Length: 206
Image 1 (cartoon, one colour):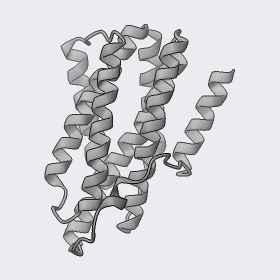
Image 2 (cartoon, one colour; image 1 turned 45 degrees about the vertical axis):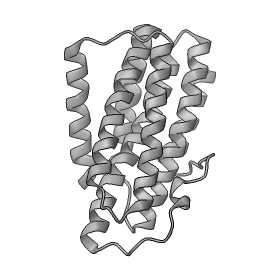
Image 3 (spheres, one colour; image 1 turned 135 degrees about the vertical axis):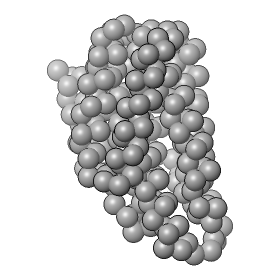
Image 4 (cartoon, helix red, strand yellow; image 1 turned 90 degrees about the vertical axis):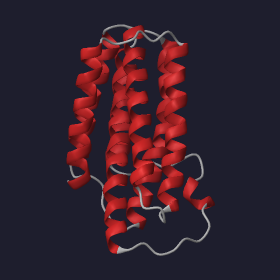
């Protein structure tokens, strides 16, 4: 029952957009930058909307995995990582609003789908769950690296946020590996990449 209450509380905070970052927003360290053109603003909004949707899914994934895990130590590690991802959620939301955009209309769907996947992974055992986490974070890290190449060069605020997110995702992947993650079969990893591509394409527009 306690796990369910915590899961519902995290879901409410995630989807209500009331999450507050514990760490300072990396964009605050950026010095004055030139104004973005209309096309650059639209590109940044689309990319940061994708990143925000990914963070909505990350919250659900961690909650689902914690719900299915039998290990109190792993649940604690997942909670720590989820708190860092909550920073990402707040930062990306703030940046989207600064640019005059909106978050994805499908955030509840991203959350529900990721929670189910996380719960299934958790039920398959901690090592498999950690393997799922490691593979996910490695894919997200690569995805964020691609965004650094696609964000407008003048949008240093968004770039600072994405760079910190990328560093955090790499740390989460290393954490999963250090705890004994089991490598997932290649077909599962391919399916994960395809699912991520679908979410990315849809979230950028909707």
